[in-house]
Length: 253
Length: 225
Image (cartoon, rainbow over all chains, first blue to last red; front, side, top):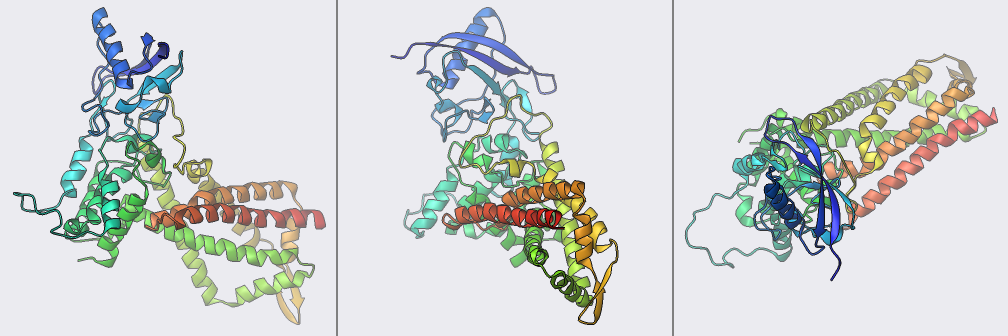
C-alpha cells in the first residue's frame, strides 16, 4: 500500500453570498492516496469541527460521478487534473506527496457563491425550464421499440444526454459561457423523434434564456469539452447552432 | 414563437455574423495577397496595370469596398461585444488557471483574438491612409496614364520602422486566422468527426502561408531597392 501523504491546501473561504472571501491555507497530514478528493475534504472538515472552526462548505451527493452536485476548480482546472471525471471520482493518488492544492469555486456572474465552494447553479434550472423537455402524456412507459430511432441518432442523443449539469463547462470557459450545457440539452432532444416536434421552440427559448442569465458568448475555445466529466463534445454546440439557425433563419414563423 | 431580427443578435446569432464576415475577409486576404505577389516580379508595370484594372471597375469596386467596410465594422463590433460580455460574465477571476489540455482548442491564438483583431483594425486604417489615400504618383503604361502604386510601395518599404510594423501586423493576422478559420466553421454549425480536424489543420496551414506570403513582400522590396 502506498504511503500516506501530506498536502498543503489553499481553499477559497467565503462566509456568505455578499461577504468578502479569501484564500486560506491548511496543512493536512496522513492523507491516504486511496481517498477520494471529497473524502480528503471530509477529513479536513472533521479536523476543523474538532477545533471548533467552520467546516469548508462544498456540494456533493452521489459521489459516483452521476449526479452533477460536486465540482470545484482544483489547481486551475475544473474537476481537477483527471480527464472525464467529476471531483468525487478524483483520488488523492493523482497528487504528489507534499503537493500544494488550490481549491476554488466555479467563477461566473451567473453562478454566485453561496458559501465557500458552493455556488448557486439555478441559472441552469431556468434554462431547462425554458425548453429542455418534451411535452408528452405521462403514465405508463411506452414500449421501447414503439418509435424506432436509427442507431447513430441514438448514440448522439445518449452522448449529449450524459450531461449531468455540473457547470464545469462554465467554470472552465474563458468567457464563462454556458454554450456546452445548453447545447447538450438541445442536441439530446433534437436527435430524437420525440424531441423534434418542439425543436424549434426549444432552440429559441433555451438560447434566449441562456443569454438572459448573463453567461458569456462562446468563442470556440473548446476548454469546456476538455474538463467535462462526461466528455461531451463541442460538436453539440455546432448542433445547437444548426438548430438555432433553422429556427431563426430557415423557418421563421 | 415569433422570431425577430434580435434573435440574430444573441450569443449564438452573433457568431454566425462574425463567422460569415470573417470568411469574407479570408477570401479578400487571399485575393489581395495574389495581387501583391506581382510586386515580386521584375516588371513594375505588371503591378501598376493590375491595380489600374481594379480601379477601372468603378461602381463594382465601390460596391465591393462598401461590402468589405460593412463586414469589417460588423466583425469588429461583435468581437468587441464578445470580449466585453466575457469580462462581465466573470467579475471575480481565479487565483490559479491552468490549461485542461486536449481536446481543448484554447491556444494563444484563441485567447488573443481581441488584441490581434485590434492591431489588424489599426493596421488596416493606417494601410489605407498610406496606400489608397497616399501619395499620388503617375506612370504611363502602353499609352495609358495610371497611378504608380509600385513607386509608392517601394518608397514606403524603404523605411525600416514601417517594415517592422508591417511584419508584426502580418504575424498577428496569421495568429488571428489560426483560431478564426476553424472557429468560423464551428460558429456556422459545421462540425464533423472526420472533417473538423482537417479544417483545424487547414486553418493553421492557411494562417502560416498567408502570413508568410505577406511578410516576404516588404522584406524583398526592402532589400531589392
